[in-house]
Every structure is written in C-alpha cells, then in structure tokens.
Image (tube, rainbow, N blue to C red):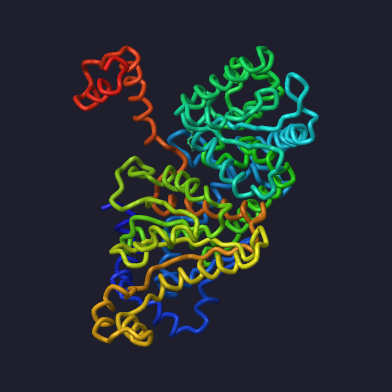
Length: 546
Ligand code: G6Q
C-alpha cells in the first residue's frame, strides 16, 4: 500500500466515508438552518455555495487534515516561489507571475522575472492597439479586419475560451477565428470569406514544432502569398507567439512580430502570457489586464487564506472526497452562461492533462484513483439531453454549476428563466423526490391512484447528488480571470493530495511518435512490415493505393 493510503488522514476518511454514504442532504439542511452560510464562501469576485455537498463539519475537518498532512501550505508556497515542481521536466510552473500585479519581484534562479513579463505585456499593448486602431496595416496599406490564431491544445483552448467568454466586448468589425485541427477543413472553413489583404495570422506555439500548427501555418502562408502575390506579405501579415525564436525567424516572421514567453509557463497555463495576444486584440489590452487582475485576486486568496476557508483547497478536497472515498469517476461542468460554452473543453484539458496520471512523484504506480473525466455543456441545453442520467442514472456525478447574477443582455424574460433553471437543477439533484411524493403529486393532479402507484417509481428522484454553485455578479474579465485561476489551483491542490506532477504530459507522446511511422507508411503507399495487423489493415484501407 502507498504511504498516502496508509496514512492516518486517509484512513480516517475511509472510515468516515462508510458512514457518509448514508448522509441525506434533506436531513443535513433540516438539522442546520444556517447550512448555506456554514458551507459557502467568497473568493475574490466569486461566491461559492458548497452547502449541497455530501459533507458534514466533520468531513471538512478530516479533509483539511488530509491537506495539512500532504503539506498543502508548503506546496502552495513552492508553487508561487518558483520551485521546480515539474520535476520530470525540471521546470517551475510560474504562471502566477504572468498575472502578478503586486509590483513585487518574482525570483527564479536568483533573477526577477517581472521585468521580462512587463516588457512583453507592454509590447502586446502596442501591437494590439495598433491592430485595433489601424496603425498596423497589411502589405497593401489596408487595416486588418480578421485575426486568425493558429495553435492547438494550450495554445488554442485558453485564448479561444476567453475570446468566446468575452465576445460581448469583441469589436463587431473584427473577425477573430481559431484554427487548431490539422484536418484541412478547419483552415479552409476558417479562411472562407476572408480577404488576404486584411487578414493577420498569429502563429501560437510554445515549441514552434507542433505538427498540426506548423502544417496549418504553412498552408496559411501559401494562401496569403498566393492571394497577395508577394512573399513580403509574410513579414507584415504574420506574428508569432513562441519560446523558440530560432524557428520563428526561420519561418520568416519579423523579430518585432515575435512575442516571447518562457519555459516556466506550461502550455495549458499559458493564456496569461503572450498566448493571450488574440484576446488582447479581440477585446482590448485593458480588458486583458483586467483578466490578469481577476486571476491575481484569486492567487492572493489561494496564497493567504487559511486551508479551512481557501476556495481552491476546499474544492480540490471535495473532488478527492468524491473520487477516492465515494467512488465518482466523472465531474460535470455546467455553465449557465452561453458565453462560457468553451469552458468545459478548456477545463477538460486543464484537469485531465494535468491529473490524468498513474505514477507518483517518486516514480511508483499509484494505488488510488487520480483525475476524473471532466465533461459538460452549457445549461439549459444539457437539461434537455444528458441531465436525465445526472438525476436518475446509477452513478453519482458531482457537478459545478456556474452562473452570473446579471446577464450580458437585457432581452425581456430570458435571464431570470436561466437563473431559475440553474438553481432548480441543483435543488432537484440535492433533494430529489420520493416515490411517496411523486405518487401524491400525481393524485393531486387528478391521475388515477392505481396509475399514480404504477408510475411513482419512474417519477421518483433519489436526490443526494452533490453540486457546487459558483456565482459571479456578471461575466466581467475580472470574474472570468478569477474563475479560471480557481480551477487551475483546484487542479494543483488535487495533484498535491495525490502526490502526482500536474505540469507534465508524457501521455500524449506515444500517439505522436506512432503517427510518424503511420504517416511514413501512408506516404510510401504500403504499410511497414513490422506493424501490427490492425494498423496494417487500416493503412491499406485508407491508403492512396487501395
Ligand atoms: C499543454 C500541452 C499541449 C500543448 C500543445 C501545443 O499543456 O503541452 O496542449 O499546448 O501540444 O504545443 P505548442 O504550443 O508547443 O505548439
């Protein structure tokens, strides 16, 4: 058994979970009239209701004891202090420095990184202002009316999610598109209707070697040069965001169009760096800086709040409670906010690429479950689709509801319906409806008692299905920044509890490597003899010579 599973704090939770399985949220609320106040908290611009969780004050105590046992306080200090927590790549994870607004130095290897961070932010401001006000123009002197970001994974999901979230602030005359997939459909459809003379490409790639991004960038370059009939267009119509300055120069991108970031910024933690340039161009640098400010507020909270009232710590502990002690395999993210429609996809990468690990920090296989499957869709759409399983399926799925008290628009009768549905869903999940209640309700509605009796088992809801509700006043850049940082830190808290490294991603390597061999076979028109039967068969089936 691992030291974690054998540890006193873990074992105390195992024992406690045996009784917690019988907890009833109805009973817990009946027993404590102030449960909502006792189990909710504020963090920066967010209010977080945790009262609909299958926990008592004792559960919270035991979970916090686990955090303490696992060295949470010093792990948080190490994160902000630039310790090389990403031990397999020997790198720190200092994304918090990118949004540090304190004016204090952030030291890495005896050097303050903040002057570099501020200098790139200043360059981003000049460039994004220039694109927005027309001071920067295309080769023929025309202002840009389209920005196409080419990147994938961490160089796509974060900025895309934020641009979508802040779409209400995107200038209506500016088209902002994101191309990630190597499937040429993505590039072709994204360029449809764009004028090369007015199109700016941002090639976002930390390494500047990623196959999909380089393939798309090369095709975008051909589209531009053939449209404008001039090779010089590359220098004016392309900018790059990368840590690989040699490769950006080799591509032909002018040095003053290259925005640098650093190897201490992980891909899925990079939207706060120059990878956020499409955000700054889309909504303006002031709003981008407000986004950083919101994240910094959450960082301050995470760094200073006691474990008992620390929002990322408590949410991380709840996740571990459900995953390891109550056997939940998945976690739903349900934003009741259409502008957050890309948030589930973004969180899927953040959480699953960070905590989808089976080897602990000392290289041993874990003997406990780690990261859950994260999934979701905006409400109310999900209610008419998969919510059935959440309410009446055989598995318990903890859910995160996210909502803004004030809507972005004011069409009559919309926002209160949205809010009512969100709150009602968490209520239905928590408190359910007994068979007796379902039967009585049908009889009240005039249904024959025998029929009511027959249908009652189908119309009953078990309840006791847990959820968190995260409320912001409105979806401002500050609130969004705080929300993203909250989730980033929740992932870190869970990794710390599980003793795994959330900042590497070796699990994506094998597929990339094998794709090289398969591609060589496809291009040769014949599968390599040493491949397995299925791979050979598929190459034959889709290959050019079949
Ligand atoms: C994120 C991952 C991964 C990465 C992409 C793109 O944490 O490392 O999603 O962001 O593979 O990599 P490049 O930015 O190097 O093109």
